[in-house]
Picture (cartoon, rainbow, N blue to C red):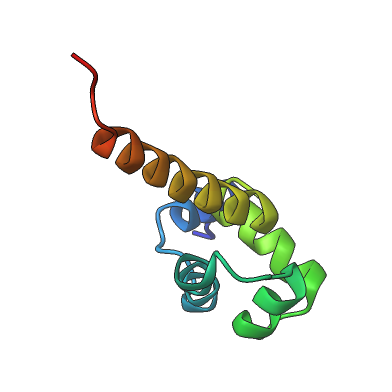
Length: 91
């Protein structure tokens, strides 16, 4: 009996992300403070910019640019939290 396209899509959603996309995510996580373009990430992944963007968004639910921005904001938030925690408290 042939497998339905819906069954294939459901089973693919449970698959781990492809290694090339994980490489691009790791690149962002390691170098978020640098100037990074979607083209740079596509090169790391070994894909065209357009195909990389589509695959990244489909796999992780946000665009590569949005992922980069969220990593930067997360880091800034941690830095602010650290500064606030170290700030002397007045009595």
